[in-house]
Each structure stands twice: as structure tokens, then as C-alpha cells.
Amino acid sequence: MERTHATQQDEALRRVRNDCPIRDALRTMAHGLKNERPVAEFTPADRLTLAREHADGDHDREHALLMRMPHITWGATRGEYGLILDRASWGA
Image 1 (cartoon, rainbow, N blue to C red):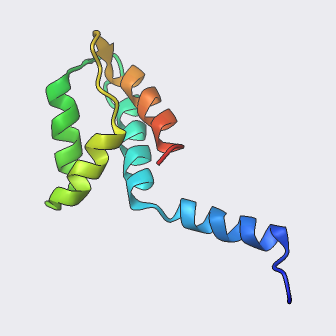
Image 2 (image 1 turned 180 degrees about the vertical axis):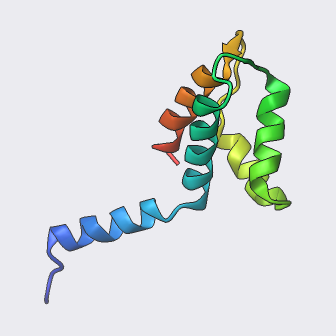
């Protein structure tokens, strides 16, 4: 019985995780929020709009994005929420 070397398995997992479209969308959103008007207010309605814009009309993708985008219950700025999304993208 031949065993796969552990580093080959790790590389395969790294490739799968790096090719995740949800993770890519979250990182793209985070980048935009941190770099475009970062001190403007970010509202729950902005969260829904952002997910819809990055879902490209795919309702399943929109749902997947919303599941990964944390709810905010305090007054946050776009830059702050961008940092939150960046952190959330690592779990996607």
C-alpha cells in the first residue's frame, strides 16, 4: 500500500481552499470597503446590497455570501466592516 506524502495532501487542500469563489468574493468586498470611503457608515441594508451585487444574480451564491457575512448590531464604518469581512473570508 502506497501512502501519499503529507505535504501533497496539504498542497491539495491549499489549492481547494484558494479556489473558493465565496472566499474570493468576500475578499473583494473587504478590499472595496477598506479602500472606498472607509469612514462612511455601513448599515445592515448595505450588507444585503453588497451580497446581492457580488452574487451576480445567483440566489444560492447570494445566500452563501450572506451566511458568511456577519450581522452588525452597532454603528460600523465601511472600513471596519471590511476588516470583519477579511477575517470572515479565512473561514470560508
